[in-house]
Image 1 (cartoon, helix red, strand yellow):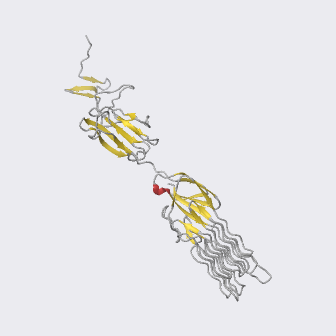
Image 2 (cartoon, rainbow, N blue to C red):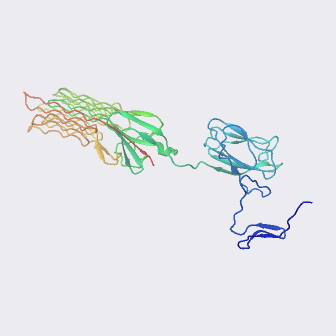
Image 3 (tube, rainbow, N blue to C red):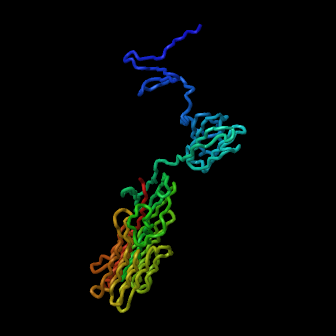
Length: 448
């Protein structure tokens, strides 16, 4: 005969409170506030499910598998599409699946019912093809089979941003700024997971042209190209900024920073180009010398000593990267033309012997500080006091030389300013022009 213990209540020794209490057909385990735990390794039956699944976080699925009732799975289709086979249906059975790598849109997950069972009333496979999709299937009956009772997206992720190296790195609020004053590499190692945050604003300024000697004309400013500035914090860009920001990719971008054109003992030298990705700015045109004709073409044109100024925006881009150089004048007195700048043409000289003023550059706050760059070099006077020496344009343009034998002033380094023209102290002496200023390349993007 089997032994039996018959009780209606089991109470604690310490305070006589109920541990098990039977009242009618209801059995109460524990008192309010108590926790009921199964021993390690024990299992429970008969309590039913709560409409949820046990997520199998320790077994990420990467290939075709068969699901079990009561379980949820993370499916990684980054390596290719595969199938989740549903178990044989029984009323109340439940299975869930979620897009582990948010790649269902590229590599679908097929959900296949058991035998001739149905999904949503149709005896056919279902396809999960939405990025980040999560679906929960409950088996109801033979008529409808498995019904998708809940469909959501797990596409909400932590925000990532562009990560990059190269140049001198500074920060302004939520934005990083990479400044190159010489050649280097801008290396993007990570992209943002929000496309709008992968935009990179830029400023690319080429080297300025060198000024000519002896009544020399000013050198043209290096070509100036800048994105609008609306993509990365809406900083104040220059009035000639245009086009669009560049979209980052995980790659290496070689950076070229153009050197300034040589100081002329005759005509000056043309400046050298600066490049970033698809953006190339052309070096400034050289200033001519001692009545020898037109200035050189370039990003901005060099001034003419006794002839036309050089053409700016050569080769042409939109918005224009620079302006024309100034006309040289004479006789009887030769006033040399000035180099063009980013926002203004170089002023022409005149036959009274006055040298032209260098064309003005452009001011941008891409590096968080309003800075003028790409001013044209000033044109030389015939002789002082017979004429006035031309100043350089705002933005690093060098002034023309004057009495004292110092020659034309060089364009300021890393502004792309044109060099000033050399003065003509007298028949027995000559001055060289000033060298062009080197260029600069700056990038800006959101990093947090």
